[in-house]
Length: 203
Image 1 (tube, rainbow, N blue to C red):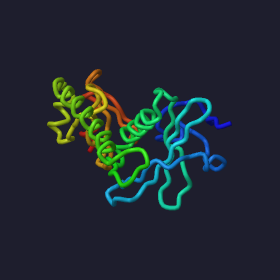
Image 2: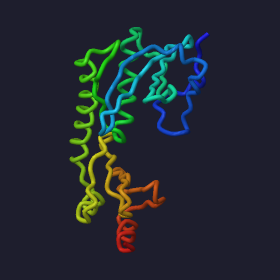
Image 3: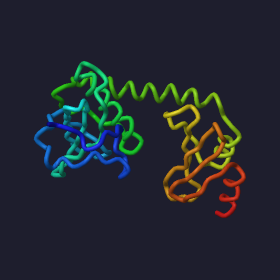
Image 4: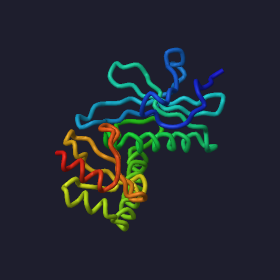
């Protein structure tokens, strides 16, 4: 019987989400598609698996790497292609901020036009959210701009922004216009305008 290792749902971005190994179930996955990713247009190979306990999984391999499960969701639609589209869209959306958008190379399920449509729908949704974000410029956003920290809407929520970290180490800080506060997980610092001003003065 084909079952899942865990009933958790989502896209694996760190060790907190573990969908188990593919070592014993490798043959249960079916080929889905090949894409070109990263700035070097490297080929990634994707496969999917539908379990007897009503889950769909998305796995990938890169080069000679072992197949890894990157996403898992309960089946939401009666049509298999709709479920595949759902998990692929969620996976692209989650990884895009780190690796950019993939390019279509080949697929047993999607045409190039269908795949490009999935990517475009994600971009359109982010653009709409970003435009809404620009309707609410708070004092913190203004302060970030004045200090050349280049705040930009994240595209995930109208109240979520990203900006350059004052540390100068090349990563971003997260900004919430809902609370008008910021935070940096790498530097383990957070606060409002006063705390940001203090940090900038340290530099």
